[in-house]
Picture (cartoon, rainbow, N blue to C red):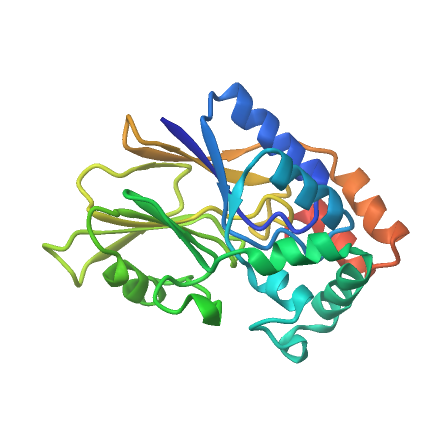
Length: 247
């Protein structure tokens, strides 16, 4: 089976549609999302509609939580993120806001788990960027679950570990991550709607359970159109400009 994992869409419908089309071409059977469906971008309603209509399972991201006023205090957001969250709160309908409120912090399946930040403290939305950051989430995983998919930092990478060597955590920025030989794997799937690794192309993961591999796949999309919508909505210019540079 091939499972598509979407990270940090951030109300960018152009990027989301491009990734979903690439998933279809790759023979993906199911799709899940690590949260932050909204925030920053100009199409929160369109993204929520696509997620719902395609029956994509999503967890709650910190921007989703901030928009509906739970768990996250907007005072801790920078001025650009705060402006986007307040704008999003105004333009979403009550059913759309209710949908965001309904999202769980964690989605578990027998062999994998999906969370926005850290698995050990999902309500804190901690960033996982180093081996030390990954350690607690890796140790928090329970067999038979062996893969944890996260987002939040917008940087795609993997942390791999064996229980036989609990103090050794390998990391990789490879676009193809072989899981064989590891019994605990944490994969940051990057961002669909706002990449921050100096590559403006959306990135998303495909978990091939048959071949025991995770592929981080890039696609092209019309970022000028997405950026133009941000400007037309009156959102901060920096949110449009960063789409062009992947920062």
